[in-house]
Amino acid sequence: MNDWSKYPLIYEINTWVWLGELGRNAARQHTLASVPDSEWDQIAALGFDAVWLMGVWERSPAGIAISMRNEGLLADFRRALPNFSPEDNVGSPYCVRRYVVDQHLGGPEGLVIARSKLAERGIRLILDFVPNHVAPDHPWVLEHPEYFIQGTQEDLKRDSHSFVSINGSVYACGRDPHFPAWEDVIQLNAFNVSLRDAAIATLRDIAAQCDGVRCDMAMLLMNSVFQRTWDDRAGPTPEVDYWLQVIPAVKKGNPQFRFIAEAYWDMEWALQQQGFDYCYDKRLYDRLEHDSAESVRLHLCADLPYQEKLVHFIENHDEPRAAATFTDQHLRVAAVTFATLPGARLFHEGQFEGRRVRLPVFLRHRCDEMPEQNLQQFYYTLLEILRSKDFREGVMWLPVTGQPERKLSSDI
Image (cartoon, rainbow, N blue to C red; front, side):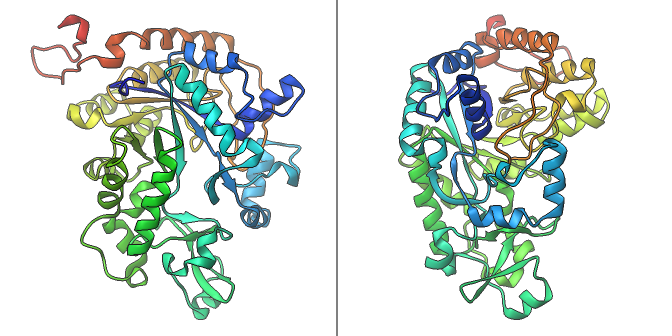
């Protein structure tokens, strides 16, 4: 395929749910190997440059068991799926047992076929990488305990929600420093030299299967954040940051491979400097949802090279559905805003139809919702406009007195 588009359009699909619905409509279980060509054709017709197949890696039985004891999660499951049963919980895609495509989805062979089908249509494939933690039953937990943040029996007695005992050893559960620990995952030690080598090897293997990765909670691995989160438990702070070591090592053999950071706390610029091709523009999302038009305008006055390396969105699997968040008119304004900016633009499967129920990523299926045809037509019209060369390769000018705020390639 040719080089990536300057401003790519990315389509996120909840792989497990999507395949289940294709199978239901066809009265047989579909895998990535058997997706009808018409489905890939439809995605291509909408003009997408890349598909993010969210959640293809092998999920954790241990993680499922832990989640089924979490009353907060169970309430969330029942909110989204009133007739929820334990069989509906197939585990979190961010509690990875192995970086091997789940057999339920077609295994590695199925992914090869799906990637080939996408490539035939000029569409690239994005998958997930979770650098901060792994499932309790990931092979590394027993084979390489040195890869993890360790705890003590005293830690376990004091805080059993943040530490866990596995095969006689105590490990810290994964965490974001601003929230309680995630009890279903084990915290990797980003300062450990051997862990970094293992992460590079894992990413090289992933890079042989796709064209880019969305890196979960990427800022947690930065030296400054990791040291603040784990202090002495992590050991000495390395001279080189995690991503400054990992990204060049992977790109050395595959320079076209793209790294996308899930980023928060205004860490986007710092992550761009550490090698990420694109970072989430969560700040724009928050301004579009809560702030004034002037706040949005000021956000868009940032330097162009910075904006060109952002991923803009008004919906993804972590955020509430846009149709439930914005009024109809507000939604359309927000959609036109994020979709016409320089940088990557992310759309979420179900967004066009106006789905309103955010589905927890643990669940295998969702409730039926009636498509909003007027909204669907709006999005299809917007996507048709975005297929033009101007919005894929156009040159943007920053707001300067006496100059237009935007100048597209066709005007130059």
